[in-house]
Image (cartoon, rainbow over all chains, first blue to last red; front, side):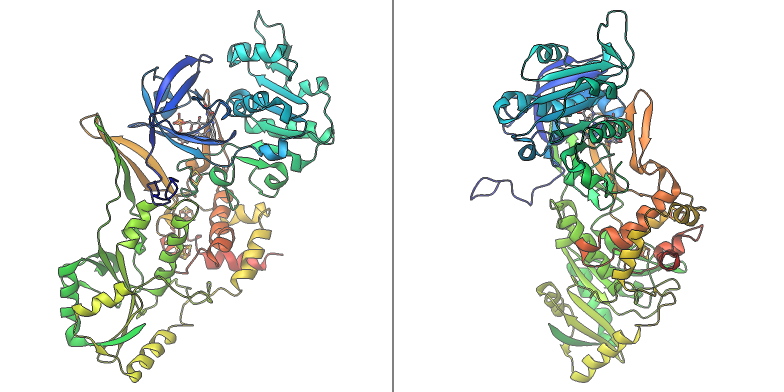
Length: 280
Length: 343
Ligand SMILES: Cc1cc2nc3c(=O)[nH]c(=O)nc-3n(C[C@H](O)[C@H](O)[C@H](O)COP(=O)(O)OP(=O)(O)OC[C@H]3O[C@@H](n4cnc5c(N)ncnc54)[C@H](O)[C@@H]3O)c2cc1C
Ligand code: SF4
Ligand code: SF4
Ligand code: FES
């Protein structure tokens, strides 16, 4: 810490994580665990869409998005899907355990460009976790935004996360919420099909600001739907996923063209992403 | 800036004194080739080397570097710089170090590199022998080597020694230096100028023109695929390069299984896994799946992507990649001259 203002000095070790305590850990689905955390030293600040490098010593570090809004600062959430070595090890942790974090990292959603506008968020699969930081933010400061639409697609009903919240959003007049699954089970009464088919239900004005987060293959088709409704590329924001190791613009893994996704992103306006040949 | 002279006879004592104060790293012979290595005696030093196998960046950014140590008691960083003198660095490698200095300073400072760098005194030296794949005189020709603390030039009957920083000045007490005469200084200048134009390989265009054309050639997929056709994705061209700085990070347990280290390792963008992500349930996506796209990424990084940040290309023309590539396709001169000619 610097003596004058208490800010972080630039000469600290950027690879040294800080300890966070798990206050609550619940299975969000069979393979996604939702952790509620508190920093051991109490302090953390983040913007919706920023991410963390989450680690467990002996296993490694992985990039994970903030899954809750800074408007709820008492604690914060992250949701991790069991994928490989590191996520698998972290998802064995329970309340009372610690994990080790470097955060906040990257550039999040452009709240200032969304404020005062209609907003649509399109989330596919695990993409609902990082966008939840923005969904909660908008819900908590609802009068700062105009019409708010959320579209969420999951593979099947058992992979739907945050079921209680989904139910609340469904009932709320603050949000137009539509969900769909690729494949139904016997109890599913909702929509079945591709996420893009939900656009028929929406009523989007061409000035709407759009945020997309999901598997890479989803982007192209969602963008087509948005463009069809007159939404311009500079008003569409993509939350990109790339291999990451350092999260601070050094290791080169996330580089697209001359941009580091971990520093310049992970959120990019589509108009900019279109100029980065490898982004889409 | 001060200019000194050291006689041939006093050189050995100078080196011995330096060794007694700090770790001294200098070029030595290894079989028919050369490496930067810790020196025990002055006779090991080979200032007549052409190029070393690995660039000197390994002294600040080693092939494996521990970042965090952990145990059941807690964890701590591993920044632990040792004072070193890096002696006999050719000007192109000084430029390479200047480039890694910039990238590790940029965004957030990486003290794991910078602490090592700041603890080093760099003595550059004139190029006595030009390597067979070098092109340092035509790449970024307008960029001056900077960041070194002193410059040693072999002149008749001895050495011209120019100090540029207080760290450089501090070395004067290690040897029987006298003030250089004007004649000696102008001889040193001539010696250094005389190597310009002697590199066996040549770029034919300015860095600016190259950067533009290379960038504009991004979507010539067939051209890139053809250039990379024989690539083994071995990553040697990255590993030997003074301006490559990508790394992987891995945790390892010690044998006790309760303590261990988080370590970074040099990584290579030419290898298949470099940009691959796991998507769960056995799915994955590789953003640079083809050899052509990885080969293109490397050339883009060397000739275009970083130019704005660095003020010039991220290649200093050492030719290490050219001679290290088994398929003989990594040579930036060949690649760039080809790209410049494709319509
Ligand atoms: C900005 C960002 C935000 C993310 N947010 C979330 C989230 O909120 N929840 C969630 O479950 N997942 C998220 N991911 C994906 C998550 O990082 C990967 O699932 C995770 O890295 C897999 O690591 P592993 O060691 O378990 O898998 P392995 O297959 O063993 O991966 C090996 C290493 O490769 C790298 N890697 C592999 N896959 C990815 C990937 N998809 N993205 C980035 N690096 C990868 C990591 O460094 C990892 O340690 C996010 C990724 C990014 C880039
Ligand atoms: S270009 Fe040559 S050195 Fe580089 S990865 Fe391909 S075969 Fe290996
Ligand atoms: S690209 Fe090749 S010639 Fe250029 S600096 Fe790297 S190793 Fe040397
Ligand atoms: S994750 Fe290392 S540069 Fe972006």
